[in-house]
Image 1 (spheres, rainbow, N blue to C red):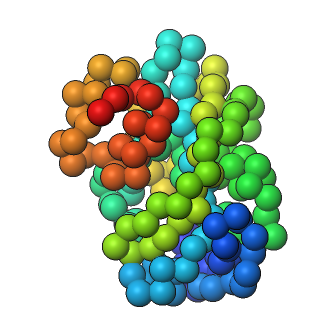
Image 2: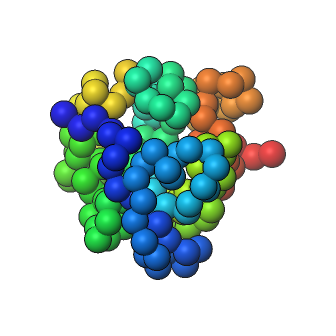
Length: 171
């Protein structure tokens, strides 16, 4: 079980990803400090070209109940980006055997935080087994379903940004 703690420590980084210090989650997510901290996102596709999306648990402190990228999570102090991606994918979807490639690194700012996002695209033949402590539900969506629901408020703003970045949907 992986429940987030307000005292969990995050690395604070510069825009190049170099760690400057560490700070607790509660400070990084307080809406005031805007301390830049690294996260990983995975967009997992199946062999039919469908994208797995997760519905964030209602217990999440940010955007509860919204549909989001296949995997998303914070990098721990001293952890590599690739190790964080593999750890989060195992924790959230129960997958350890998947292929992935780097898409982009960018800064994302919301009213509560600033993240240095490392975004990846992946493929897996196995059906994800979601972690109910972190995710309320999850399923593969076809591209037409995603396009039809874009802009309706059911997706996180960051997911919609990345859908454009991946050219899954176009402005």
